[in-house]
Length: 395
Image 1 (cartoon, rainbow, N blue to C red):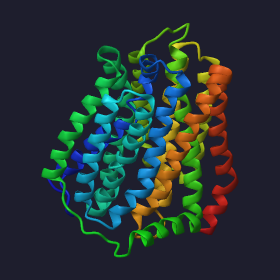
Image 2: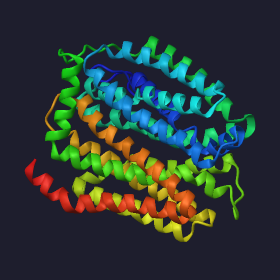
Image 3: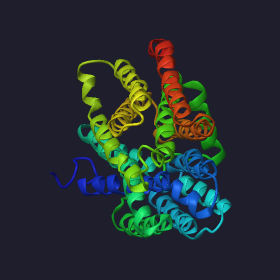
Image 4: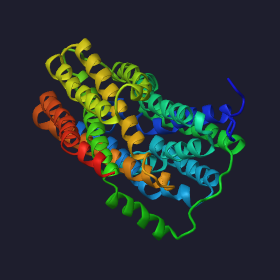
């Protein structure tokens, strides 16, 4: 592999950003296989514990909205270093929190500060040559996807061996190492927005209001991610009951199955040689919807749940990559802000899926969760069928 790109970013730095993206985004997902352990430790209901996941995702959406646009206005290296200090403080609070409200607040803060990967994607785009840009962005995104999926596996194992608090303490230690790596190796970039923070945020909302391609991509992404979050947030409750009677480590290992789907999705861009973006998105959303057939009809078997997890991850991540490809075609130098609109919508959808799935679990257990997940997938598919051609023709 070459030591440097022809434009100005080394492969070492690209790999560093990929690894850091995975480590940072993982902070948002360690809690999912640990919810049952947290509920038992604090003597609270499972539905109360599940709000930890909801608040983490809401926090991430707030961080995307309020912090990521600053990547256009401030020196990014300094912004990332300050943000990492806040991540470390939030993880330590989560580690030592003694009451449920403290877990709620620290989870919100962990989500809000763990948005660094969304600052890395534009860095990779800006510093790469035309020939290497897509592969460099793909590498950073692969690290992000693996971090999301493997965090559930690691969180489940660590939680079962040492307790749920240990996972967040270990995560805080890893963030210290990440801070040192960023300080030593990340290049500095000049800001490209000269206005005030108020003007910066106004431009974000203007993009959301005026770009139909971005609007449709954001809705599809939100619904697809909501579908996946409905599955992963409640899977731990489903599997601790008969016929599985499984612990956190078993539930977390389903992240490995999801990694299969996500890594397959990383290659989806190559399909553009043979067909158009809208058709790839259509097939991806059909896979999301179809995954719930396995999850529902074979939901009392390991093979059914594994098939459902692989397919939902494959469909969600494929549609996610194609959504981003779609709106990055918009001619604009506001790449951070386009990404902000989409990713805020994406994680609001995830929060909504998590919240509604937890309610459905209380009312109708696994059947209710499957209904919520399938409904989200169906909404994404219907919106795509109704509006994709119209949006493409007006762009």
